Image 1: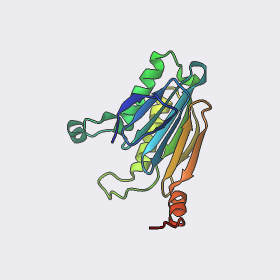
Image 2: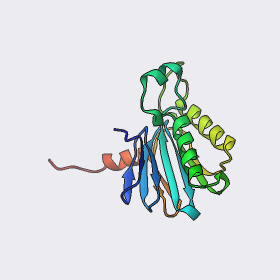
Image 3: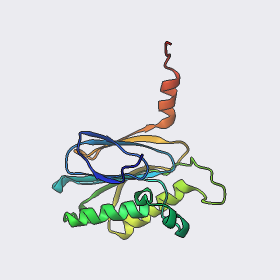
Image 4: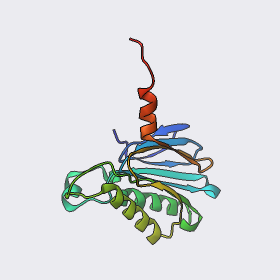
Length: 175
């Protein structure tokens, strides 16, 4: 279940769709992505980091009325991350930004189209329009990925979800 926007309080966190985590402490933040997109931000000088797990690009009118979990939308998650960094005096040009996810997972037909592609487009457009420079990305393609963001170094490890499933399938269990 989503926690929404919260602050890191331990050395490890796992976030799900609709979560935004802000960290002033060194920690590792993980999530699993398919068509969802995560954006990591790090300002080394201020010891400030953040990561979101956005499920959809932006709400439509009917979604806005029904859905109270605003951070599942990248438009809201990124806006709130930008505002928090600005409030801490972090200039966008000094923030290390990385984008992950946006894979082709959900076949929604003509209703939503390629959700991963739309998520990536919104994230890139938002970051560019607000003066952030994307330093790295691991995006698109088929299948999902598990990422772990180390807020002390800015490093992000990526593992293909298919590799994780294969490891589990090859493991024998005794009853």
